[in-house]
Length: 79
Image (cartoon, rainbow, N blue to C red; front, side, top):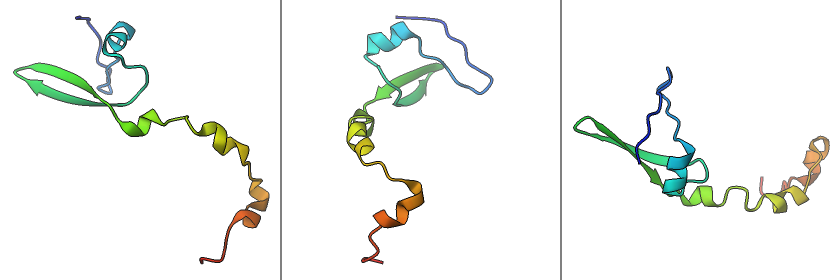
């Protein structure tokens, strides 16, 4: 699949939706970029850290801490 895109003045490129779908990219992440004889290649890299983004968000939201009473939640024994 080939598509024409623009390069911004900050040297950024936008990967079109149909290209992302074709590659199975459904969230931001890392990519490897390389050149060979005047051709730029961008290859998505699977990063295990990004797989967990938001997965445990609900568990962390359960324990809300009032910032004004933060000292009550700190364990000072190890200091």
